[in-house]
Length: 211
Length: 211
Image (cartoon, rainbow over all chains, first blue to last red; front, side, top):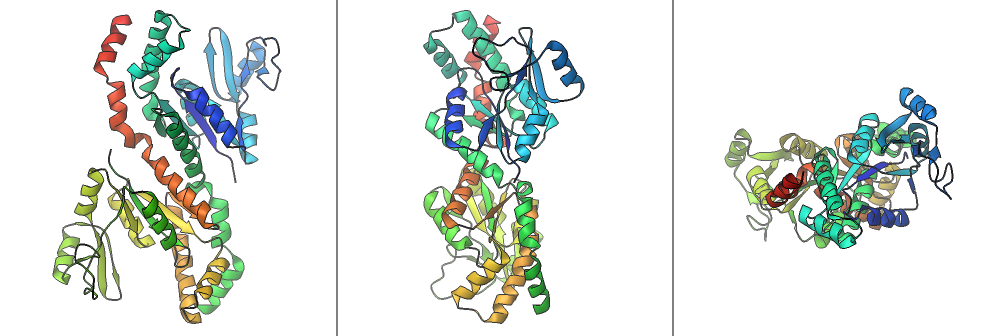
């Protein structure tokens, strides 16, 4: 059976990283997609493990050749999801998880409509503000900028397949797991198994002879 | 939040009744839809509890007035799902379970596209044959007829939203539960909750003043 391409997005402070980590631990067949980037490797980062490190020319070529499921420019560096690696893994039956922003997610859906897009929502913007303040790592201006971006991102959530509200992490996790399980049994995805049953030759003969 | 209309079909001998009973026990918000029928009440059957017992004229009027989500004639009696009762219950946030055949299920989908159609598949037709024989209640001819009907029903399963293979009852049950959970978080279903978050007036003012 082909794997699932799962795309998760959430505003900063929604608890997405925690949920993604729980998910990776729970589902052993789930793999993170390794992005490619034009950013320089940081000390300790390994090519092909943390990122595929590319030159700007190489990256541009990938865009031109339509070899990326999605890409974006962030602070002067380019980041993208290599299409061939993802499609190959899916073909091998692996489930791939992409943890990307709304812009990227919608690009993926366009290039691979079978992707499952899940948006994780904070219980309220006020709650999100509270969580961001609680972190204590960001100044008021950064928090306000994050809230503005959050609001913009949330307004794109209606284009996702699912929206989960993270009001309680265990519940959100259960919902996330259920979505992944359920998606495996979508009719178009189990076609192989289905055809085997419906086209069982021996049985068909038996039915025909009896009819 | 509006309830879910869940429609489950399966060939006889697939284990559907067991799964449906497990589901009713597990999900307290889940309710069985009460069908209407022109069949005479059997001793002990209560109108409005087991069935809504109708005269043929009353039933025909319901068909004409498009008051049934689906209906069928079985051995000279009519059976149908009353639309008003189901829609009212869904509006009240109750989840409704319909346990009907493929013909009925596809009628429901046509009349209420938001219904979630789940087909339960035996692991193979041979396994289904084995299970039917094991029951020991039916003669070979009846078993063969059931297999023929099963094959016809299975060929309509591709029109369902989900196909679950009941190779192991606990696993099938988990998948069934996951589908119901996942469907609650489909984007179009949580619109209310979503609008509340995105249109939070106080927060919008705050964002605007800061922007």
